Amino acid sequence: MILSEEDAIYAADKFINYYSQFNRIDDYLRFVKKDRIFSRQGSLFGAETEMFDSFDMHPNDMNICVHIVDTEPKSSSRFNQWLYSETLNLTASNAVEEAIPGRTHKWIIEETTTKKVLGVVRFGSPTINSKPRNDYFGKVLPLDVINNQFVMGFNIVPVQPFGYNYLGGKLLALLACSNELKNQFDKKYGTDLKYFETTSLYGTTKGMSMYDGLKPYLRHIGDTESNFLPLFHDDEFRDFFWWFNERNGGERLVSADKSSKKLKIQQKMIAIIRKSLKDQNKLNEFNSIIEKAKNLTEKKRYYLSKFGHNVDQVIEWWKKKASLRYEKLVSENRIRTKLEIWEPGSDLEIIR
Image 1 (tube, rainbow, N blue to C red):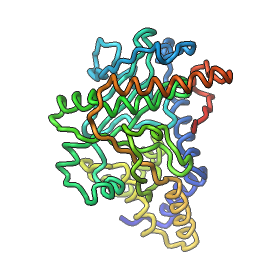
Image 2 (cartoon, rainbow, N blue to C red):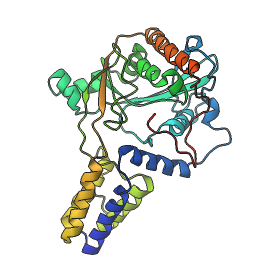
Image 3 (cartoon, rainbow, N blue to C red):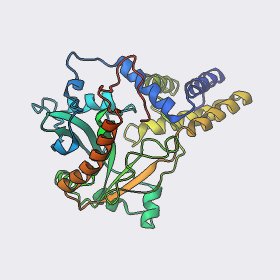
Image 4 (cartoon, helix red, strand yellow):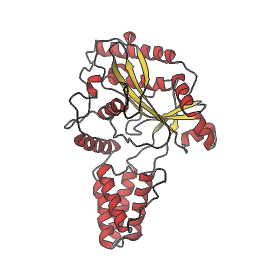
């Protein structure tokens, strides 16, 4: 596919104008998040009424329960897809993709005395090629081993300020390292899980993660590679997708049955623009902004855990850590008591 010079310049400018807005990855994440929140349809009694808000409660008095999310459309369970999605979207600092291919297993974590939600977690199929995993095991593991023995934690999100006050992110990560997950996932998918893995949301922007300090349960064993573009989001992507399809005789740029379609479509768009542009100055400007945008994504910290810990064990370990944190904040009068949720007009502290 070759674009006309006029169309090639238009398409190049779309990329240039979009990515020129961002200097760091959190600029991009905040932009996408605020755009989604602005278009979100709120409800009179939203998920925020379910979130933990008893900030005079000591961690030792908490009772923690893991609930599997009931994803059935007409679920009668309180711990359903709506509560999971609303909690995630109101709390997470990144814009969450809902349509995820492959295996999926979701949790809602509850404090049962208050009957309030502490956070949500989504697990799924691991990435096939992972440099830190390859380095750790000394080789590229066979695909059947990866699919049968590894599970990835994609969204591990405590509600805020429970996360801040009580090291809530560490609690969720520890629960993910427990046999509770292994037993559920093995039963659901016929796997024989041996390893849990996850990556930090941020890389060198922050230099640390809520997953640090969790030895012996979860260890940082390396950093991922980083050489890809943050994707155009939502309407920006859809409009451009159809614009390209029209100029390609109604044909899709990438087959609908391909994995990672969005990434591959955007890569194809870039290749077409480069091939079509005759204006050397515009081509240089386009290539420059693409390289700048690639630098927005950073090497992420990669963490690995070997299953074998029971859930009571990790909760007790967390309570000791959380108690020290909570008592210190109380003594310094730094306990946060206001729910931190994304809503139109909000601009939360995205890197806590």
